[in-house]
Length: 198
Image 1 (tube, one colour):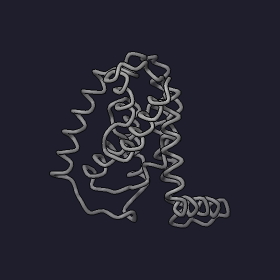
Image 2: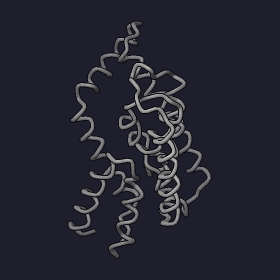
Image 3: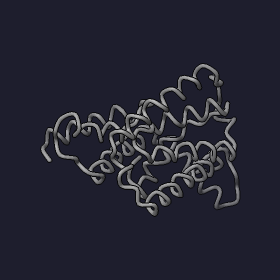
Image 4: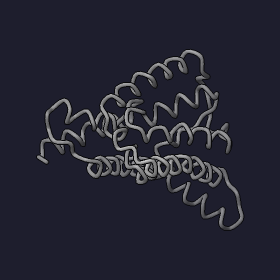
């Protein structure tokens, strides 16, 4: 793989990860559009780890509060940050389970299929439009409950299928359910390993 391809992949990942479009889907499209050889899932996962590192650095204060809140849980004291950390953990479980199921079902044609990417992009774009039109627009982090976290986690698990935007499907689920969570970036890619396609 050439340095030029690596740079393009990194730039595309860095831009698309924080928009309601599928970063994995766009990484899969690059070889199709440029004629370059497919970079493979390992490279995709490395680019996602890069954006995860950027998120951890940018939100280091929030991450530190979550760590402190988690430590307080071990001392038997439940704080707002500790509760949020539990919700993040609970929201990660559906993605882990869904990734495990996909791996067991052995569906390689689904993993890097251009047609799947295209259809998912269209379908979730329409769903996001509907959510924007009819969903609740003003929410606060204090409204998050365990039920919300699991619901959002289930929606986010769908992002293991290329073409499904993690942020997009999460925002759509939040709006349609009339609840809010802005912590999805701290879940997968941490949980991308079972199927390696966030």
